Length: 360
Image 1: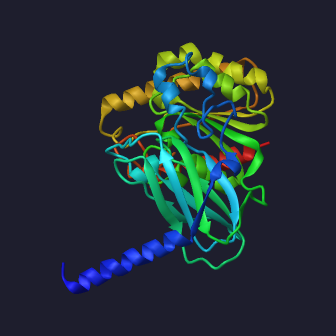
Image 2: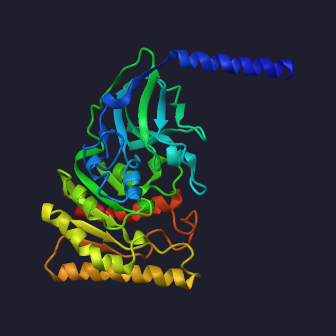
Image 3: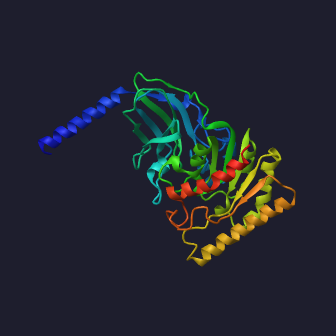
């Protein structure tokens, strides 16, 4: 190493040590957590209650330990926000960025709504992480929202601020905690395959409508389990239920279990609107005839269920068809099925006006 490079490395190291010395970390467990359907978990950062661990399929139970859609709210006057967190595993996927799988996303509340601040990128192949999310801010009180990983769990998280800065619970109820929008579905709903946690479509909708969203997306496992319907039924104050399970279900599965799943929710919440969503038209369906036939069969079964419920007297149910939910140019996909950030944004923009009209 030449002398100039040595001095540069030395200066960078000294700067990093100086920054670390100025950061004070505090456990986030005292700060409010949003996005959960229930609080009946041993681990704070999970989505399904511990009581289901032995009664549902292991794959579903494992996905319930992912923190998709969960976020921490806080307020601080710090010029720097950092995070130190421990993921459940070093899980990675070939078609999704590590930042989306295991990273954190920070937003701050402005006069124009919630705005992105920065992403804490996980270290590949390890579970322990420490990153600066944003720095060099003017010292003033700000409201923050920290999104948790989409396809990993979190064992512990600490938030770092300037040593003399405040860190406390939010002063503003935003996104509003009452009247949650409850989503149930598949890998796309869980967040596959957006680049970072704030870009999953449920979180985009939450910021746009200023309403807490609950993400019950389970990759490959949104198969109309009645136990999950019961969890949804126990949400205290839902505003809308959004059922987006079709990509994980066969037509036979929908015909066999769809009505009973709906009835569990409807019995608990007779006046809450329920929105049924068709399987999106995948990127390759315009050339893959078998894939198109499969999607059409699933959507036909979903339409049959919707019409059957309408005929039985259900009035507060709504149906979103597959057409144009992610555009028509086939550019919304990573692998022909899962969404890019563009796909997530288009999907959210398609759903927002429908949900907004039905919210209580």
